[in-house]
Structures are given as C-alpha cells and as structure tokens.
Length: 441
Image 1 (spheres, rainbow, N blue to C red):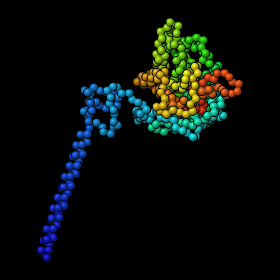
Image 2: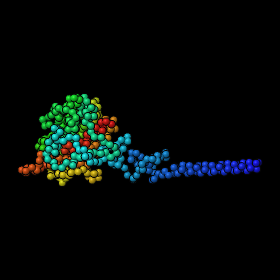
Image 3: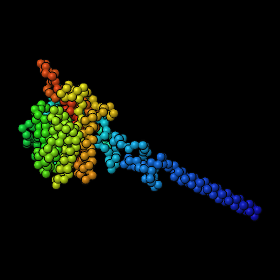
Image 4: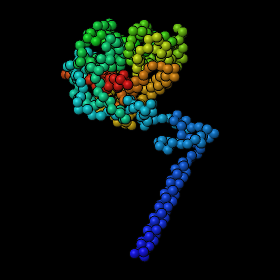
C-alpha cells in the first residue's frame, strides 16, 4: 500500500512541475509577442522628405516638422513640391464633418416634378417649356443627389410653417425671378397665395400667403449696385450702362430692414458693356471701344460691387438669414444668344464631361473670395453655391421653346435660343431642396 501511495505522489509532483514549466513557456512567448508588436507600432511611422501632414494643405519648412506622435488612422496625404489646392469634389466633409450639398450628381427620378404648367399659374411664358411645345420630357425626371449624404425632397408644408409671420425675398437678376417662380409653383400646391404687387414690367413682384402671414417677393436689381441702364426687355441697348461701384441700388437697400430671409446674387449683367464710377467719377469701363476710357474688366467691377454689397448686409442691424448665390453658367453651343448659339441636349452631363467657361470661372472665383473675406468677420451669410450642379444640366433650358410653338407653320422668323434660364418645372426646382436642407440645419 505504501509503495503504491509513494509512486502516486511522485507522479503528481512530476505532473505539477510539468504544468508550471508549460505555463512559464506560454507566458514568455506572450511577452515576446507583445514586445514585438509594441516595437513595430512605433517603428512603422516614417517622415518622408521631412514634410509634415497639415490640414490647411500648406507645406511647412523642415524646421516646422513636429516630433509629436502621429495619429495613424488619418487618411494618407500626398505631398507635392508646390502649394496644394483642395479639390472639393474629392473632399466632401471638409467643414465640421458636414456633407457638401453642392457636390454630387444628377440621378434619375421616376416620380417627376410636383407641379406642371397646368397646376401652376405663375410660370413666366419664356420658361413655360411644356406649354410652348417642347416635345421631350426626360429632363423632368432627374433630381440632385449630393455625393455623401441624403437630400430630402422639398416639403412645402414644412417650409411654410417655418415662414409663418415672416418674409422671404430674392434680390438680383432674371435668374432670381426664375428661382422664385419655381419656389412659388411648389408652395402653391400646398397653400393659397395672392399676387399683391408688381412693378410696371413685372420684374419686381410680391405674393402673400394670408393663412400664414407670409410674404414672398423678388426685387429686380441685376447689378445690386446703383446703375443707369439703357436697355429694353429684348436686350436692345441705346447707350452704354453706367454703374456706381460704391453705391448700392436703393430699390433693395431701403427695404432690407424688413426682410427675414434673403437670397442675393449678381452675375451675367456684369458682362455687358459698362462704364464704372466711384465717387461719381469715371474709373474705367468694360467693353467700351471708342470711349477713350481705361478698360479695367468686369472682374474688377464685380469684386468692388460684391464687396460693397456684403459690407452692407453684414453691417446691417437687421440680421436677416442670407443666402449668397453664386453665378449660373449658360450652355450656349456654337455661338452666344445673339450669334446663333443653341442648346439642344436632352440629358445631364456627368462630372468631368464638361468644363466651365472662363467668364464663369472668373466670376465664381471672385464670389468665393469675397464670401470668404466676409466670413472672417463673422458674417451670418450662407454660401448657396449652385454653379457646379447647374453646369451639369445643359438639357434644362428652354432653348427655342422660350416662345410658343417656335416651329409652327408660317413662323418664318429667326428663332432665338435661351440657354441660360431654366424650364419650369426643371432643374432649378432642386435648388429648393438644398435651400430647405440648409434652413433646417
């Protein structure tokens, strides 16, 4: 019995020693793996050419390279030998992690528009493409889709509730009138509206929603600045325009204190032949041959006028919620509006299929720079950057259908194209989707 018990004890001791040895071996292996992993975690960081990664896309000198720990989960950044310009189309969440509503593409939308020429009475004749006989309808079945976020369809009921006891005013040229008519067509499907004012030429107008005490208006001021214009409704001029770059148009500034919401913007009128004045003295002109005046170009005037406009808005005691809309590109091909240019495309472009015209690039550059300058001083303006999304819709213009039945029998007159304004319904309706989203966030 004793021998039996002794052998049993020896076996147990041997087993215990073996288990301890195995545990120690495993612990040593684990410690080695942890050490190796820790070492590799820091040794894999490499600074190439002494260039650091900076969020403002500027290249520091070698002396500014920081030795502080590098966050490994940041996206890789390619460093070049020259200053880097951010391509907005590739960087959708640059500001506070929010999606850029103005970068994306047009996607097919089988639901179509929420109104037609038969359900909206306020469509201007030159934009009433369906009534005027445009045969294709595919341009009606697209909606704007931002790349990195969902854009809900405009809710007229929600918008009108936001606007209860308020006023909403569009200030600018005929594109502003085009936009307000789009908005009015959508809102009128939801609520009764009364036409309460128009000027002699129906360029400035006001509508009233009595059940909500809400006023919607458009003010004709194509330069935003004070101007003397010698031009009729068909664009025929009898003398060159005179524009005061340091004085704004009283037609909107004298009413500004009563506005709650504003959409404002300049644009194509700055391409017209114009004499520029400051302090009531001629300082230059654009496209004024034979006048013996220094040519300074439209960009100079546009910057001056926008600067004056933005200063007025930001310094006003009335802190109206203001959308600053960028320029709208046209789609004339093989000429301009008065030289046989036309637009007969029936579908949208995709990104990269079309380049912006030089004048639109210059205008948008001025707009973005002046807006950015205002932002540095705490401006409450919001950038309404519709340029790029509009560039992709060559199919959305009236073209020859700016007039009724342009090819009707007996109509032998030369047909003029409109490749700047938008058919209603049409692509400009999507601007309201974006505007609503900005108001709600």
